[in-house]
Every structure is written in C-alpha cells, then in structure tokens.
Image (cartoon, rainbow, N blue to C red; front, side):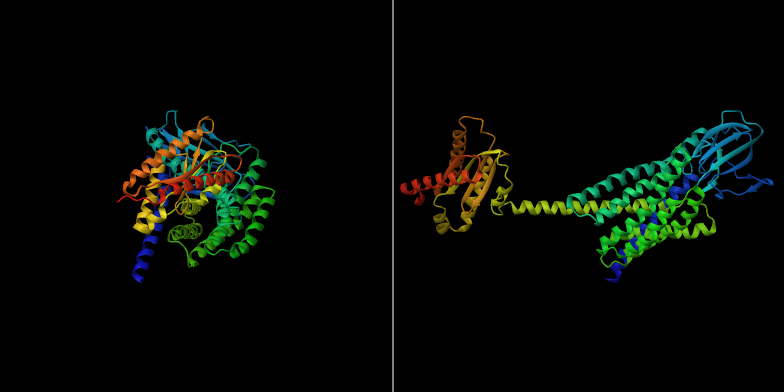
Length: 531
C-alpha cells in the first residue's frame, strides 16, 4: 500500500512541477532578447541622467507619474525595435529626437499596456551613433520597463511578437472564452437542479469573476476618461479577490459539504474589497491594493490547505493545489529579492478554476447519463425489451391514435406443458415480430404477463384507419403463428381508436379483446397443440 501511494503521489508531484516549469518557460522564453540588446539605459532624475539596470520598475509615488529613459546604440542594418513589457498607460518613443511611435494619450493615460508588447519599425536611416528615448506615463501599479528591449530584423521581430502575443494575449482570450462557457454552464446546472449555494454555483461564479479579472491583463488602447478608468480598475481588482473567495466556498462545499473557512475569509476579503472601492484616486487605491493582495494570498493558501486536508479528495485535485502552492512560492521568492520575472500564479489560478469547472460539468454529465439509464431501465421490461406500464405515464395522448391490447391464447397451457423457458422465448419472439412490423413512432408495451399493448401513431386522418391497424395485427398474428408451427400460437386482441381519454379507450379495447378471447375459447382454440 505504501509503495502504491508513493508512486501515485510521485506522479502527481511530477505532473504539477512539470506543468509549472512549462508555464514558466512559456512566459519567460519569449521575453529573451535577440539581435542587438539594448542593455545600457539611463533614467532622467532631478540630478540629471542616471544609469540603471533592467528590468526597471518603480512603484507609483503619486496619482500620475512620468519617467524618461534613454539609451544609445550604434548604427546597423537591423530595422525593428522590440520592447516586450512596458509598465505604464501611455508611451512615446523618440529616435534621434524624432517621434517614431506613440501609444496611449499622455493627457488621458488610460491605456492598458503593461501586458502589451511594442514592435516599432525604424523607417529612418540609422546614424553611426543613435539615441533612443522612451517616455512613459502611468496612473496605476508601477512604471518602467519590465524586460530588456532589443533591435533586430523585421522578420525576427515578427516571429518574436507572434510568440509574445500568443502567450500574453491570445492565451488569455482563449481561457476567457472557456471561462465564460464553463461558468455559464455551471450556473445553468444550478438552475436546472434548483440547488443554489452549491459547489457548481460558487465555482461558476468564481469563473465569471475570473473572466472579468483577466481583463486587467488584456491590451486596451483606452479605457475612457480617468474617472472611468479608476472605476473599471476597481471593478477588475475586486472581481479577482471575490473570485478567490468564491473558489474557497466552492472547494469547501465540494470536499467538506460546508463553508466554515469561507465565511471566516469573507470577513477579511469583503472589507478589503469595500475599502478599495471607496478610494478616491489611483494612488490611494494602489496603497489599499497591497493589503488586498495579502488577503488574496491568504485565500489561495486556505484553498490549498482545504484540498490537502480533505480525506476524500479526488487525485486530480492535488495537481492544481500543488500548482497554486508553487505559484505562491514564486511570489514569496521573487518579490523580496526583486526578481522581475512574469508571475505564473494568475495563469495557474485561471487554469485551476477552469479544471474544477470542467470536472464539475463532467460529473454532472455522468450523473445525468446514469439517471437517464435508470429512467430507461425503469421503463423497459427486462425480459422482452418492450416498454412497461411506467412508460405510459409520459405518453403524449394527442400523438397516438389507435391502441390494441393483445392477450396470448393458451399461453398458460404452454407454460405448464413445456416450461417457462419456452414461454419466455415466445414472449420475446412476439415482441421482435411486433417491432418488425411497426414503425419507429409506434410503441410495443408489455402490459403484464402475456398481455401486450400496441400503440399506433399518426394515422387518424385516414378514413379506414381501423382496417389498416387490423391488417397490421393480422400480419403480426400470421408471423407469430409461423414462429412455432407445432404450438398453434394464436392471440386475441381488441382495437380502439383513441378518444379524449386514453384510459377509457384502453378499457374499451380490453373489453373487445376479452370478447374475442371468449369466442376463441368456445371454438376450443386455446387447447389445441400439434403432435
């Protein structure tokens, strides 16, 4: 048992670590510079230009901050500038004192650029010595350059931009679509089951909140006015904290059936969200955001603890739990040491929430299939495969126009003389013959013992409908008799056109059937057997 558990846990850890490494490499590799690397930069201060090392990011000290950066490089045949990560909301780039690129409005800096990649084709001929200046304005978070810029050929820059956009923009768009679909599906499941405040509800709500939170990382050329940008940013950040809280509720409901830890974390999360929404400007919001990020850290940590402490956790659940743990470790290491590498945690949060959502949808689908199978089995006669009495409860009375009740003649004598195995075989054979002669819209129902119902659809508009049904029954009778010629198999039947009440029509058909059966008994047909 120990060896089995060790192997199982080893593979879980291996999968989680491998996924973490792959995501990290996928985020870091496209940022690596190629061509001529622009590594020597200066920043303009009150004392003039001072050198600094990349990456260079400063936390905002006011509502709006502007910095100017510059570097020099020699002339070459390379013609495209790539700046992988800009920390700001508007940027201007000058080459030899001439404006060559601008993104965002310096008077109304509401662009979302920090996860965007800049590719600038240098159309002017380069000098032997060139000066490149980058002016950035930021209103929220930080300001600066988060990865080393470089100059390369247009073809190589286009290839790099494809990778950068794939990882930092397209992936978020794809996961946003998946988040929306799965979140809506889970909320629809809650409505179908009429069971709110369930795991599906909390995970579905967490997914929709994650969808809104992901918009913080998607490029926008503008977000309207500064006031609009402030409220959008408050909503985006709040959705991230609330998503983590709903995730706790969902996990706890799934593995423990209660929300005790979630309620405690709500006492910390909700005040932080409210306080952040009350802040009057970007600077004060950013200050509160540091405290709120600590609450977010605690929410994720509580989620991990809940998963690992659960005695009934599914094995797959350990993988996202380990991924979340590795993401927290990266934050604990990189922030104090000022290691400016892309954080994996936002991607892990989205992937983990989606994985839980997918598993909930799959679990519901499995339960739905099992329920359908159970309902189907409850409506099917196990011996003959025909429908049973329960199937008639859901019968749409306006669709079926004729009902015929059939009772096997001399069936008891056959059972007594030849045994129940042969009797069962005859019933199965009759069902097969009836189905072979009926349409897919008609029904074969085992009414009980050796009695069957044939329910015929969509022939009421025909004037001679009764004769058509009677010809059908006679054809079945002929084939039924040929199935065992030595037994002289026959049956009695009663046919009635369905009126306003199916039950009354069935009772009338039953009377007609017994009238025919009495006639057969008088003729002595129920005791004849061939030697």
